[in-house]
Image: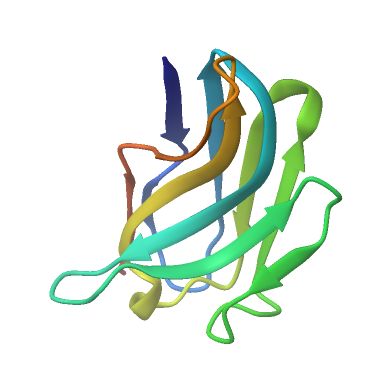
Length: 120
């Protein structure tokens, strides 16, 4: 079984920072890519940042220059450093990983989500 667990969400004032973490555990052979998505109430889930096994990154325009995604391949962990947070960043943030499990099958897995609230 593969499990993704996010942490680091919470309440922050506008202009503040948060660092989200995602740990993938279980029967994992390799992780191809990890990403962060978010879903605000009444809106569709959107990709905001991803990173492949080589470290190449991709960001949504709405977070470029403010958010930074990173990963530690040895620890099957991804982080999302969020700076200059705005009220419109408030959402549930989900970690996602495309990985090969010990059964040699490629699958996409999701975490349970962590709430980020930006409010004064």
